[in-house]
Image (cartoon, rainbow, N blue to C red; front, side, top):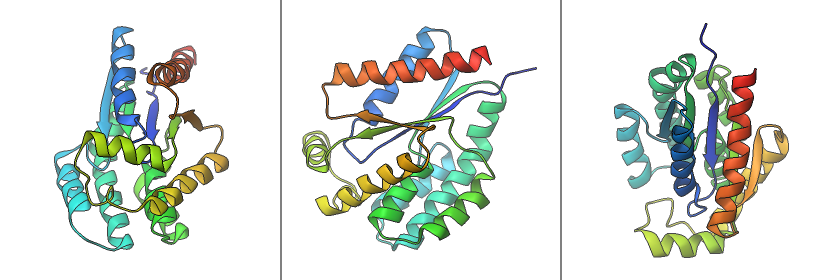
Length: 210
């Protein structure tokens, strides 16, 4: 009987560094012989990647944003995440539902109860085993984004928007402290990486010992 895999998500405002560190975690786990799926949201499947392009570049209201990301999430879960977990793989995902509550909920001021209903419909109980929240001041994240890439539609939002998004992540962490682990992403990269690897490796080792 195959042991169900572990589902680990990486969250934070744009520029927090999560995408950089998820690659390092994937490399470290592969070096230890772990079989894993490295993926992202919105995205992760051909359909979801098409929806991602619309989400990042086409103007729309908060409800449209939420519906798009949950449609992409449903396809992602059914075709990639759930099969990988059932096969015993460790799934590392760059963003998941916490991002929807943080960006569309706190950032846009959209109804959290509607998001919770969509979460129930789409995920049917599937939740990450561990979420790493890369917490960084929005001003620092903005500097990093400016130095690294052209901004997409959301990244062009004002700093006040990202302050609200950060507060949304803080609320999610407070509501589920057993799952969400805050990482001080304002520290130097080596320190952040060490903290991340320690938490992830503990979780993966625990799954093998279960």
